Image 1 (spheres, rainbow, N blue to C red):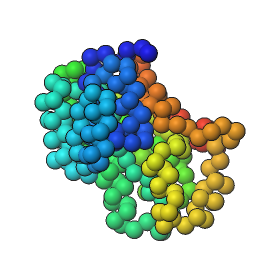
Image 2: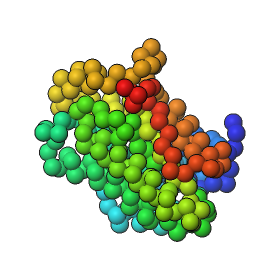
Image 3: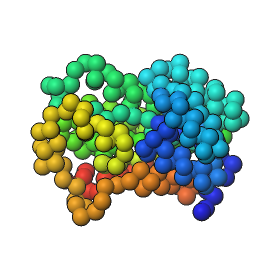
Image 4: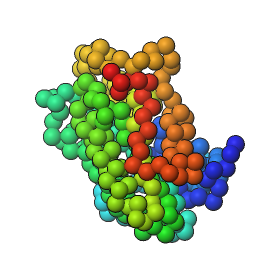
Amino acid sequence: MAQRFAGKRVLVTGGASGIGQATAELFAAEGATVAIGDIDGAGAKAMAERLGGVAFAYDARDPAAAAKLVSDVESALGGIDILLNIAGIMTWGRIEETDPAAWQRTLDINLSGPFYLTQAALEPLKASKGNIVNVASAGGIHPVYGTSAYGISKAGVIALTKSTSLEWARHGIRVNAIAPGGVATPMHEKSTAGGGVDPAIFTEAAGRNMPKLTDREACTPAEIAAAIAYLASDDARYATGTVLILDGGQTTG
């Protein structure tokens, strides 16, 4: 396998499972030293041990936790070359059904989390002339029925990506995002099965947001990880403010 990230120090949030796990595995396989920040501290530690990296328990809702995570990673690795904001949650519910607590939690984790960590990582990324890849969503571009809070939070991630890329170009820092459609992850399965969600939402969503590649299997975390790796690599050295969509055609409808 190519070693595009040999010697690179990479901070991955949400690296204990799903897209974050697949991404941490790919970067480590391509030579990076990986630091994982995750609310699941035990899962992050087990993953980091397997990959030869380091792990820290991290709550994306807390700005102080973001500052501490960056400080801990700098102490452990000597700096940060790449920040991958992957941690997030899925929230189902029509607008009128979304209570204030669910709304706030979704924004806190999906949008405020990347914002706090981006702020905290400025100095180490300036020093390394590094880059950031955020995980947004196709739902932040083209709404998915019954996921308003989630889609709005991910639209904010896209705005964060573009704003940061504009403001931090003067520091030599690239900032990009990927916008997946449905991905076969434990988080997606958990959010749609037994989560107290009205099954009618899924039926209606399928009717309103049919992917065009209906004959193919669901997108995998490994496929999303490969796209993240491209944006973070020197192969994409001229890409900043880019939102790479991998949604099977969902946003074309």
